[in-house]
Length: 316
Image (cartoon, rainbow, N blue to C red; front, side, top):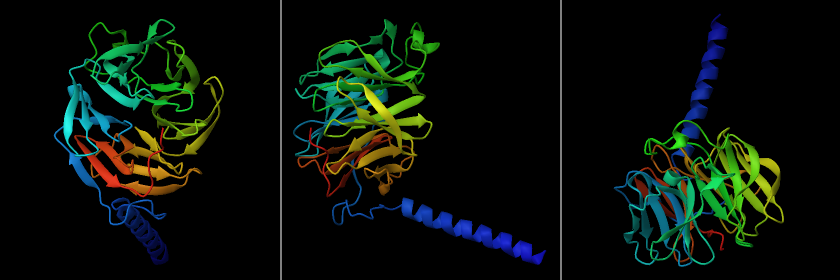
């Protein structure tokens, strides 16, 4: 009996020791391959927001992000670090955003269930708002293929309390599920390219336009696809067993995911090579910004953060 008790105690002690060490690692910057700039630390770049989301970088390295509950798009200056309002009370409550080749800001206007295009003056145009004549769930994130301008969009249904009373989405999805869409640059009609997803969310693609990464909240996995000519995708594989809200990619092909752990990076083989905890309950999204595209710009709860890296964001 004493021997059994001793064995059980030893096992419990080992588990506690393992958990402690894992927790210790995940409360520090994890960087075994040395992709973080020497002596760099996570820095707070701004605060006082309700919930930050959707960072997108322009050609000058300026980062635009949303204060989603307050329906604002904020601009962070790569030169000065100043924060200014790009769009206020636009009516879209945008989540994910991305710049197209012409310098327009494309946004997932969640409140309207639409994709919007903002020009440099902050004026918007609706470029997609339904599929097969039915309202989208609420576009969440998007990525534009730099090789042909084709746009990939995730459309999960997260019921929002700010949807109008007559909005049909309040009752149920009008699409019958949560899907991955493609919008050709020569069309204003969406195409479904994966109808077998449960809750797709974050999305990013490789700079050569050949791979597409799509994160899921349920199940907690991130997929990788081959991108085919014409915009379709195929050969879906599990890239890593982690859920993600937002995503970005660097010039080495490392993919970065965001969730309750902060920002976690994986190499091309899906091996974990990086983590930076933000200290926030949830880390929503991430992008490479700054004049040299070497600042990991992170949106987390009511704040935005930056971490200098040795790698750079994939150039469009």
